[in-house]
Amino acid sequence: MLVAIIVFSTINIVQSAGFRIVRTDVDSTLSDFITAKYMFSFDIYLDDIEYCNNVSFQLRYDNASIIDYDGHIQTEFSKEIEPYTLEKDSQTDFAFLNISVYTGESIKNSYFPNPKVLTLQFVVTPTAENGRQVTFEFITALATTLENDTPVSITVDVEPIVFDVHGFVDVLPGNADNDSEGLVNASDHVKIALHKGIEKEYPGARFFKRDNASTGKYLQKCLVWDIADATYADCNGDGTITISDAVVVSLNFDEDQLSEKEQSELQAQSDIYNKNIKSQTSVTLPILVESLRDYNTAFGNIVLAGGQNYKILGVQAGELFANVENLVIDDFDEKYTEQIQQREIEFFITGYGSKFSAANSGELIKIIIEPGEDFIKPEYVIEKINGISLDKNIFELNLLTTSLDGEKFSNDFVEIYYGSTSVTLNPLNISDLKDVSLYNALGNKIDVKVRLNRNKLVVGTSPLLSGTYILVHKNNNIRSSYKLIITK
Image (cartoon, rainbow, N blue to C red):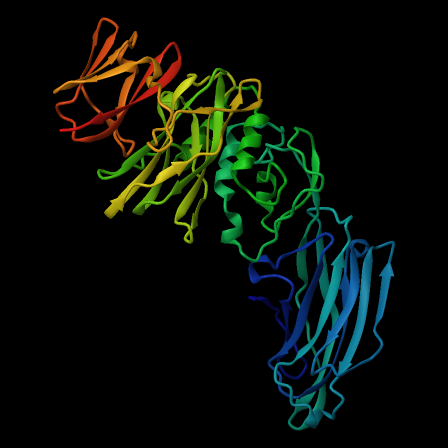
């Protein structure tokens, strides 16, 4: 494990020597704070010295009411230790720790270059207030060494050691940016996107769950994380930052207009929103849904199974959200299981503001993949996709996927006639040809000529290659799909 190294300046009577403090309980990147309920410890090294058989010091620290001394660990150098004394002054809230350690040998037999003197251990009480600081000062530090073969005592002056305190804070589920007004709005999605997957970025850090966590919009106690700013982005209190936290933001979203600050934050963070990720060779896998309820947010898991030689570029908003301003869509972390050759994508999509309502049915999102050599299209399995209604209730969306295996098409009431240059669907009452779309087996939208002949829909097939296609049309807010098999 990496350790924290803090070097302090020293002024000696005879020669130069200095204390070096090394945190032993945390990674070096996390060494400037201590956490309520948890132990912290540090090694004391005496550098720039060779012969030494005794080190004595008085260590003073403030805020002693929230710091308990938990003992010491002896080293090869500190084989003998005098009884230490610990005194606390309740009026000043200072503590004084007096320790003297020996090698048990004469000075000439105590060759210890840069010795580790001993390890000190402390515990932060659960009542420690977040944001306070604790300062450790070596008031007196003496070491016995040799100077021209003569035993001498040197004084070591050490700069104070200051630790910030991570304690318990009040968290409002959904208020990921912890703004002072307690508003749940656009800025909170920004914070969640910035902190997603934080455990991979800081593998040695601790991320604490909330006790008795709730997603309700009321203040709840939470221990500040090692990465303090991310504490509030854990909106559901499970100790991770995932798709579920974005859902909590939408559930607790305040019905207010976006401020200029929030608008600027959206523009500044535009790279995490619905960016153009398509390439000239990319393949689109559309996910189609239908609903009898208005909604402005959807989320779910999609598993891509089988297939080979492809890369997932990301997720984009579908036609339902095509004209929505202040759109947020994030595919979050892709999970890959090599043993069964499948990838899992978590997605979340929303339009800011409770007045937005997606059309009831249509293309929700598009998965964009980049095919490689000898590409084989994966099949996707969708267990459930949920929507969040305008009254902030979660419900399940019905799926109209373009996957060809196990697809339920609407051919029961429509006859399909195959001609040499066209396919006719009869009867198929359509009010607008703009509501007709054709997709190939890879999920890509195909441009074809369509026309109406009374209550029949005629699809021109001259430019199409042999294969299976899916025709999707919308009628009175109901989306239906039909399988067309073209043979040439």
